[in-house]
Image 1: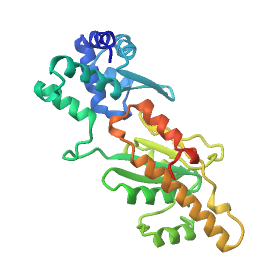
Image 2: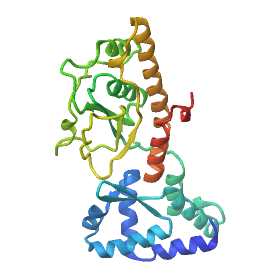
Image 3: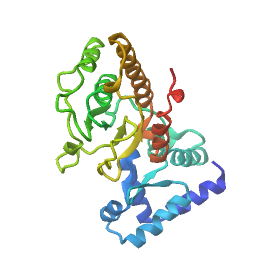
Image 4: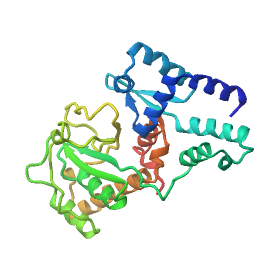
Length: 285
């Protein structure tokens, strides 16, 4: 980081409310906070908050994305790391450990700390009937990253007979626990008692014209369209081949998704990565 850039960023932070604002956004992590929630937490008028957010945005320390009618703000972690790195170089002789708290903060922001309990991110997969693609994604994520992600699935028009038998058979053959898998409505995840979702990923081209419900302003959404196994034709062997391809496509995407340093990416970067995974050619095979 150049000296002029660092000076501009430090000037933007030279005010108590802005420091409180940055702390609140750091606590919120990559999902960020809606402007209204920030104002309530800090007990500042919306006009005052807007002034301070604009200053931090101009300094490159926070970024905003629109979610429905809300503006969501999150820390730009790469920029903050660069600023702390500049401070460590200028004041600590290039040795952050000599600067006590600064060194510890920079260390926290620049590497994974295996001694700390990582946050658990909630992920909801959606498709129309919640009978195949979303069920496979739920089972896959539970197996790929237990303890890091909590996975659910739902549909806009859930199947009354439950997941497709061939889907459950494939998952069992591949070592997945299918005991808790069922077809359910997305309405189960919209009430006050429902878990708050960090990510909502749709897996079909359309949801039969239905509008996806509001899962919270800070939820990061994505779409990975995949063919519907319930519409596969041909012989049993041909259908099995197509089902295996859907499973493999989901697995590649989820392996890439779980490898992302989610806790250290800002909201804009996470949304971009999620969208990139919609393209099967962008996923490392």
